[in-house]
Length: 403
Ligand SMILES: NC(=O)C1=CN([C@@H]2O[C@H](COP(=O)(O)OP(=O)(O)OC[C@H]3O[C@@H](n4cnc5c(N)ncnc54)[C@H](OP(=O)(O)O)[C@@H]3O)[C@@H](O)[C@H]2O)C=CC1
Ligand SMILES: N[C@@H](CC(=O)OP(=O)(O)O)C(=O)O
Image (cartoon, rainbow, N blue to C red):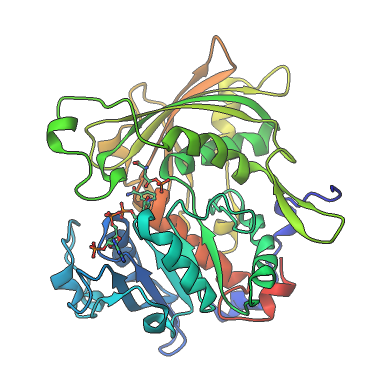
């Protein structure tokens, strides 16, 4: 085991010819990349449809949902819950069953499938050599599947060639990439910014206040959540505790030439999470306290500056869905708040406030992230944009050579 640990520096695509092929502005007709959405009628699926309707590179080509919805035009199948109307590009598309043959022309397939069915369906799509970007939890722990938060660890794309070659039979274009649990995503973005600025974080305690939409539609019954807080979300705490380690962890090159995720190659972090459901429609809040490895730790003012100045590859490379600013830092003592801050950067950014000293660990603060946008659909879309820029989409060769 061991040897080199890959870091952000490995992800150098600044000279990629694909940047010239897929510029920031809209592409000419015919050059767009056809995409499909599985689970298109759900909470996350509807956010995909809204975001993809105006996407400069991707064009909606095929939609899938359960056999209950299949065969109907999208506008008839969906129980649309967005403030805007069903986009014209989607409303007349006939919803398909989630079978690879209906998506064969798609270079990218986004999945907002219910986790009860995502496992088998996503595996079938990958086996059909399709590139799948999933929101579901099923493959997040898979040792060959990158768990990517686009502002944090795009260098984990380096595992894709191995996923393709170890698949039986080996794949030319297909793979599965997952994004993280929505609460994990909101937390790991500021945490990675602090790690980048001040080095490893040793311990992290987090208490979440999670929106109802996190449970999909219709989710928690109104009589359970109105006038109430439910101090349990099945499986959520465990996911937050290990997902952060996989995301912040490194990649180890083994003696036999294969690569593995190594949770502790880059971080000594230990996480303890307490998760609560609250009567908020969208936007997960998390109260975080953490301890840095370095002594003395940074001051609250230094933490503030590091968060304000955070930038990432998705921005500098020109991913069209990357926000201009990733982290908004509030000085007001009563922010962030879900109702006021969940649409920061159209839901693609996160809001941080109440940065102060912690009397037990080092620093504490509050973070708010839109669970349906950066917590789900927006992350998948930016991951796909990064995959295009890295040459992993629609290409058998380029992705193997660029990392
Ligand atoms: N909501 C959120 O904030 C987040 C959700 N996620 C994850 O994203 C995924 C989707 O979540 P969400 O949108 O909230 O869930 P919803 O329950 O709102 O939507 C589920 C989707 O799956 C489809 N579906 C259900 N059964 C089948 C089947 N047998 N075959 C094919 N499709 C089926 C539904 O289609 P139909 O309408 O026809 O029943 C629907 O489109 C889940 O895995 C969830 O854990 C991840 C991060 C955040
Ligand atoms: N469980 C989260 C949303 C979600 O679906 O998470 P996951 O994709 O990790 O199962 C919530 O209820 O807010």
